[in-house]
Every structure is written in C-alpha cells, then in structure tokens.
Image 1 (tube, rainbow, N blue to C red):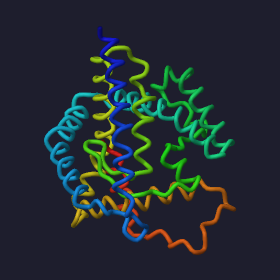
Image 2: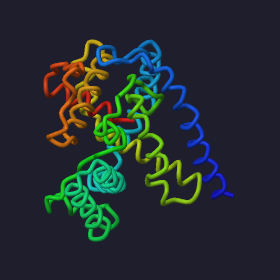
Image 3: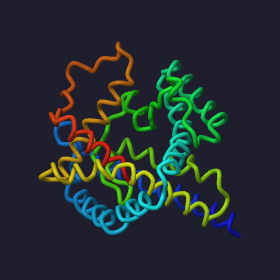
Length: 267
C-alpha cells in the first residue's frame, strides 16, 4: 500500500508540473530583458508567504537541527544529498557539450559513491574533483532558451519560466527515488530541506541586515547570478547577438550578492 501511495504521489507531482507549465508560459509572454518581472504583484505575494513559512517553520527547524545534530553528521547529510545532485550535474554538463567537465563530475560521483560510503564522505574534493552544480535551467540557457518571466514559487522560492524546468527533474530524480514508501519519501524531503536551510542560516541573517527591499534585492541577485552561471557555461566563441539588449547588471557588493544568491537557493 505504501508503494502504491508513493507512486501515486510521484504521478500527482508530475501532473501538477505538466498542467502548470503551459499556464506559466502564457503568463510570461510579456517578459523582456528590461522588464523581467511582469508578474511582480503575484510574486511579491508568494514571496511574503514564503517569508512567513520560513520565519515560523523552516528557520526554527533548521536552528533546532543545528543545535541537536553534531557537525560531522550534518556534513555527512549535506555530502549525501550533494552526491545525488552531482549525478544530475554530470548529465547537464554533457548536455551542454562540456565533456571534460562532465567526465570529471562523473568521476567525482564514482569516487564519493564508492570510497565515500554512498556519498556521506566527500573524498573527491581533496582530489581536486570539484563540484559544478549544473541544472536543466542552465543547460537550456546555454543553448539559447530565454529566461522568461521571473517567478517566485510557493516554498520552492525564486525561479524563472526557464528555470522552472528544474522542478520536474528534481522531483523525478532525487534521493527519494532510492526510497520506496510515502512516509520515507516525505522524511527524506524534509531532511533535505532542513539541511539546506541550515546551511544558509548565516547568509539569510546577513541578507536581512543589508536589504532595504528584500524582494527586489533577492530578485536582482538571483537573475544576475543565473545569467553569470549560464555565461560561464557557454563556449568562448558563442557570442551574444549584437542587436540583443545587454543583460542588466545590478552592481551588488560581493558579500551582499553572495548572501542573496545563497538565500535564493534555500527552500
């Protein structure tokens, strides 16, 4: 019975993604480089909801997790989930045509999955097999798919029309695919979310202190960082079209940009 509910849950999430994506694509038609946030009123409402959930649920859970869980255990949990995401990063590197980096990332997964006890111990980083953190949104961007409208999703946080493709892949391929059972599936998702939030406690505290308009600050930092990651993945010969308007820069101080980028990655 638990296996049935688990399969039903996966199908329901896939159906939600399939139904919602065309709606988002329709709503984002008026987005431009100069005005990337045509849904700002909606986004601000969702952002406020997410902030409330974070203040009363996610942040207290993360702070409690840090207090009761030894640092080596938290590191092992982060390494485990990071190793799962490295598998998808490797696939995206190959899809971007970055075969050398893809091979290195695949080697990283192999080392940590075997010698690193299923990813609990990160042995690859000391071996200079660094993490790349690639996703489907970056891959689509490298191949010229425009970002579309900026979006804020409930719980999931900042995104865009293009980057929303990441949600479907993260639901399809994650640590929960290794677990059979609805209860276990939910526990793994909760642990992943709390672990991620705990890693960004100091970054979000810094963001609270520097941002006059937290929504605008987070949005601008997210869009700038995503464009920077996509530009880094493009071949040197792949120049932007001359008649295309330049991507806006927001000139954020480095510490503030890192804080906003980190906060944007938190659930």
